[in-house]
Image 1 (cartoon, rainbow, N blue to C red):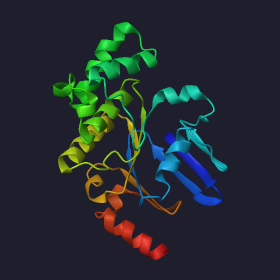
Image 2 (cartoon, one colour):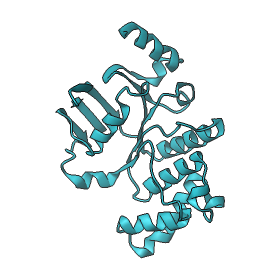
Image 3 (cartoon, helix red, strand yellow):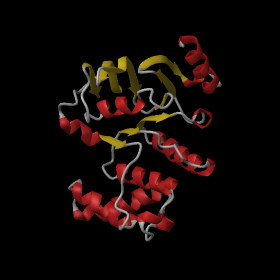
Image 4 (cartoon, rainbow, N blue to C red):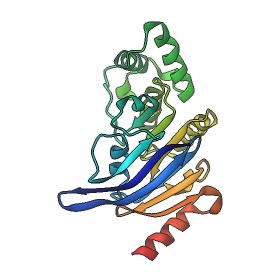
Length: 234
């Protein structure tokens, strides 16, 4: 079964076509890189998947269920491109607060917070206020927040953006570990040379149109392939 199916999605904003008949699907237990330049339509696609905005046409299915059934989103974790955090809290306080918002029972809260912190590797920084976190630390915190609800499908918008090589390595390692737990991951990126290490599949988008959808084992240079498709379609 597909964890996610994006079917014929189109979106127009202020009379401008943002997405044009976007189609792709994710098999369970895979990592898919959603590749495109800035402004290609990646974030808009993710917002439609998460039912934050509505398409003009098309349909989203999550495990064959329509997003109008909001209970299905209990299985989905999402990190937007630029998440905001209360910088006056430390990581433990923030994650504990998020548990309360998720109505997680008090008996489970402590162990869930501890497990999430350990899984993303921020256990040495949990007493530090979030305002002192680097961007990479905030990305890890966002993943920890997402894991509190124990989702099966994870949607991450540009999780590598603005990170140094060590930060990108750490985030990719976390994602690879999550895949080993049979999580399904969709993440967007315009940084192509790192993502070859973990992706099962690539979906390429340019100017709101899908220009490629291939298994990772069919190319050994995704950057070169993406650029060749961009030039061909331009």
